[in-house]
Image (cartoon, rainbow, N blue to C red; front, side):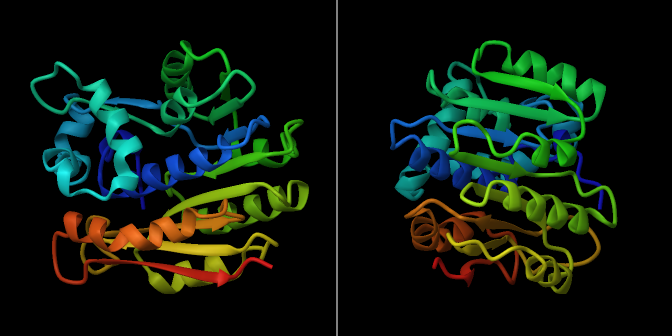
Amino acid sequence: MNYRHAFHAGNFADVLKHWVLLLILERLAAKPKPFFVLDTHAGAGFYDLAREAAGRTGEAAQGIGRLLADRASAPQSLDPYLDAVARLNAGEPALRWYPGSPYLIAERLRPQDRLIACDLQPDEHRALRETLAPFPRAKALNGDGYAAAPSMLPPPERRGLLLIDPPFESRTEFEAVAKAAARAHKRFPQGATLLWHPIKDPAAVDAFRAALPRPAGGLAAVDLAVAAPRRDGPMTACGLTLLNPPFGVTAQVEADLPALAERLASGPGAGGRVEWLAPPA
């Protein structure tokens, strides 16, 4: 599967990922102690939905576009995410700008917090560096995010989040994500980890999750399908796997995911689920 993010910015998968990401950051920021975030596959970090790549697919209209068009009926827990997108598009005649994960993280850093966002591709890194330039506590790194994960952990802050959101261009991507998550957990066992992945073959996702560590803070699965998953054709389902999710995040997602799935549904088989694969100790 080739998942170049510029083509899919703002789609249903971004809605799920960025909603949960902001819930995690909110919990981390609830304490005065600093936190560190490492984004291993950051991409450009900011997207113009009017450009050719995003405009060609139109996926944002069926994702973030649907939610903004009727904000009153969206679950309240989505407000921070929807507010972030709405601010960027204030004064625009239509939805145009979409923030990637690095932007959303950087915008929420306090003076004591840090972000390192990695991307291996030179063009993406140049765009990422420009995206993060206004944020003094955020740094763009041109390098292999999988290698960065163990090398930068544990952080001096001893609190934080590892985000692994690769493009799934390789058939071995699930294996690479599992290995990186396991190595990172060994070095930083108390840290939260957020893994994004497509769901084209549910059996492959189950095998991937079975290979992950079972941390003391629990291992949770969050899946969203806008239609029944299928091996061929456009992606219709995706998942998040959470290691050590901060307290309250999983319960909030479980409460509001059915309403979100209903809003974003595009065909039979739409729905969402939250499951503890290993409950907190």
